[in-house]
Length: 172
Picture 1 (cartoon, rainbow, N blue to C red):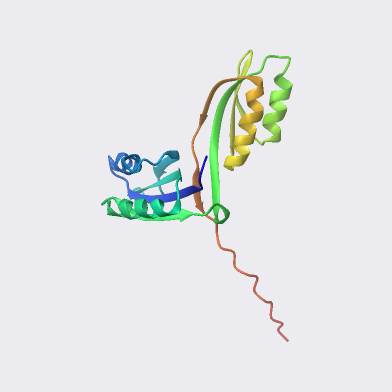
Picture 2: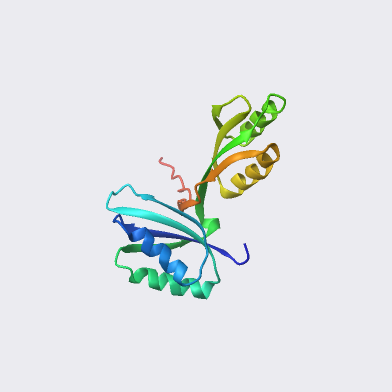
């Protein structure tokens, strides 16, 4: 990607058409959405849309202001990669004939993935982790031959703020 990646967490009302309006706002402005994930939150009235875009800072401020104008947008947060927890899921069917099956299984284990299904000459695996980890795994597993692959796109939340340890007081 060319510029800086921006991760936006957009809390919206869980209503039909909201995702389409948010996505079309990016499209009208000519911004390419690198990754988009959406799902309901713990409160069924709201959904969280995680959008990863590659834009310069000034236009991002403009699009944030326009997002707020959409009636169904409740809250927008830009998540800094260093201050957020990011995850992505990869599902992949990979060629694994008997001669290389052990190597594929070992690679899946090294990356802490799971084997979901076994065929005569293919395996379906899943891997969850930081997007960089998922990228690395995909690059290595590609050498065996990918039959099918699907990635979810990023989801992210702010990191929890840790409290400094409290000083223990002596009681005499």
